[in-house]
Image (cartoon, rainbow, N blue to C red; front, side, top):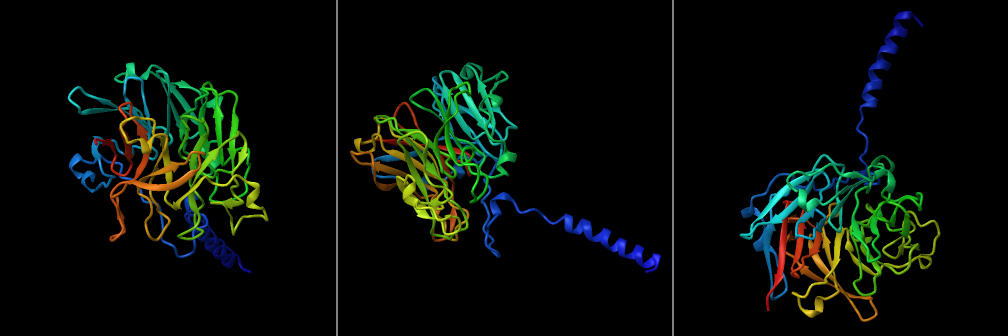
Length: 403
């Protein structure tokens, strides 16, 4: 081979290497997506939506209930927590903000941004006067927050104490958090799985966990819960309940998202071997689903069941007392839309789910296959009304009842 031919070959190889290296990596959410599928997430609007563009008139509720706008202009608003003085705090994901919404004397609201630039600060929990923010693995405590809304001091950094997996550990999958205060004074949160479906460290991922408020004494409450972004304790039995988002790319109608009842710390709910109570056809590993705790209820395929609360107020009729309100954010990897609503899981005298009932609908337009907003969280106010956060339009809706 001549020198000229050798150099020409090297030049061709050097040109080819960058072209190969520049092939885009498959994003985490798309791993396992069937070839040729164009399904992809519906990105939330991260701009202010004027009040007159909010779909309040489209909301449908049972007789006697009324919907109104509680607050708007809160791009990406998701999980909510309430301070002792009535301030509503709202986390977000993509926009990286935490908001504080306070009520003015004339009934209007004022919204402040109290933190920004955080990695998916989705999880919020109030303990006394202090607000805890869970932003993937970062845990921040804002002390005496309601007294300092106009000049927020630097938070107390608790990240090292909680030692949650980082976004890199998750590989970009299911790293955002929900947080709740248990009746035992502990903070309960989730650690989602670091894939769509895989066998991973079952002491590290796909968990419900709890901690002391200082981050000590980590305790696994449930294994095999793929991706919970909502949990609450029953007001009477003190049992932990949680929503769960099932795996993707197994079809339009399976598996359902699920509701889980945790009766004892350390229970195993079956992921990845079983989904929605059935053996996973791709990843069962010959496990019998009877080995695991079965879901308390099926919530529908790909509905994205997220925030949930037990109704502890007195405004709504007796039939809703101690029942579970669940926000279903809505599908993105399903050919026909599902979810985009709020449902109620009714419990019988033994604490079992007897039925799932639609409560707030009207945001999903089936005829045109479009949606108007995405409910992400619910919160019971002290007056008994129910707040519903709408991430897509950055609004909080208030549901009240008058006989």
